[in-house]
Picture 1 (spheres, rainbow, N blue to C red):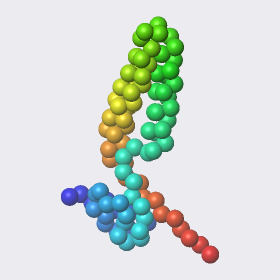
Picture 2: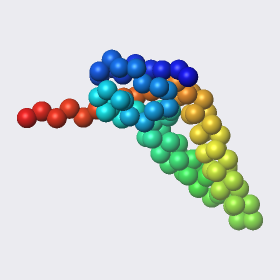
Picture 3: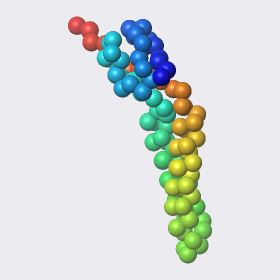
Amino acid sequence: MSEVTCPHCHGSVPHGAKVCRGCQAEVEYGAPPAAIVALAIFLAFIGYKISTILPEALSFMGWVVGIGGFVAGCLFLAKKFEKRVIFKRIYRTK
């Protein structure tokens, strides 16, 4: 099993762990949530536009394109960000 090094405490963290054992920093893997939300909003807009352009009998194709594009986009984001590891820690100062 591979390990990553925490940038805060320089401790070794096993890949897949949710929290660093040394400093309790949260570990986030994969695509950032903002990218997934942006993808969903973009494809909802595209699906709406397609459903308004097509005849009423084919307007469901907007949903098909939107959902299919979202699935394909999520797979693309998962592949693009497969090696992304972010450590998040809140520093409390007095």
